[in-house]
Image 1 (cartoon, each protein chain N blue to C red):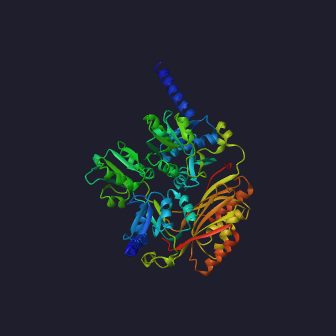
Image 2: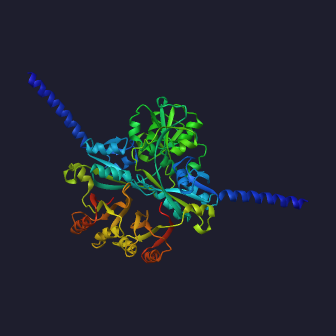
Image 3: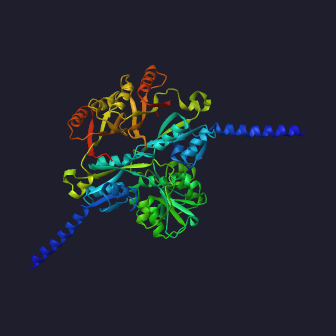
Length: 305
Length: 305
């Protein structure tokens, strides 16, 4: 009877572990509060029916995927105004995840307040400094508002609700307004309409081992490949590297050099090319590139977003 | 007598305008509060004896140089963790300034407090979100401190002093501690030691027309040139562009592509090459590049920092 009890307990434990695994297998991690632009990227990539795992930092988010607490994560990698986010390329290289898909989110900033707040009630405005910086023309038209910096755009909306700030407004995206049941008082208060952030969906497992539910969302045709490589800084080194694509009529959609700090005259290159790694010409180009570079890694092959 | 008085007044007015011009001719603009990393860049580039014009935004800073309120300005253009700051490249292109010099500032974050504050007194810590993000390991060791976001690293130190916050600390560079007469409680609390920001010194006038005092600081040998160009996205377009350098054994130290938003398949390229635009081979390379590109501009020729 003692033995039976132990067995039952083990079953309970295994069921709990199974439930945790099941939850993890449908969970998508992102950095920021609920309602963040990263959550909007999840919706654009995979629809709205996934359970989400908001993380405080990018490090925490990568860890969640590596340790199996989430099936995949969504990470911003470049912005049309702010440039490439090198830190996230570093985390990607360190954690050996792979790119499954990409999407571009238009960064639209709105003036958001509690449902009862009117424009004339506002005394204070809060958001992440980058968002405040991107709405300068609008803020200049309201010189009496006190500007308060917050840690996050969506987090600023969350604070309005949690602290019931009826004389404050926040700057964030529409998803934050919807999630925290707040009101948009002014739409599109950003200075630049051409503000886009590019996101990647990353996972630990290769595409073939992913659950069918996720694979279905990724679509069929993969026509873009992202790679990273390093070369010594000798005249013409990069030229030789690019020749492997030019000689095979493979078009590049991104190239960026990045000095390797602490190793003078060595560079890391990020390259995106239009092609599938299963194509013969792409395989030849990568083999050829391997002959010239010190280090080469394929980050992923996916459908252009 | 009436006429004489008018004349005298005019002289006074002219003297005031002269004094303003004189002040502007020795003034260097930068974005941020006094004690910011940009001010440290001014010191590294030009020494400490220039009068400074702190500006609230990069737009305001560029305007100050264009309208003659400052002789030059110092602008961050890329960071080893955060990448290139596209926005400042855009402002540079729009305002037709030119690069006179470059420098790399190591971003060292310190824990800074009022002189009477001890480590045990601290209840709250404040800084720009990017600085807080770069000191995560240190903050995890002090989980009871309330983290408050500020608009600026040096500005957070200024607030300690202005509001006499003896139970708070800020995260900023050593120059901010010195400028606001505060104390460094812990040195180098940043997660990554390899955090550098590259700055350019920009002016409206070409080097030859600058006051001797400034030209003296810039040094003699100019061995680096920064250019920007655009090409159509046809296979091999970039390869052809780079051939103009490879064929003449000119080494590149940076290359970055940037999609032109709203103009699909068109790209802007930033390239730095090691060479002086007065050299024959560089002039030939640029003339050759002009044949292939839709748009080409030399941003400046300067000594490698």
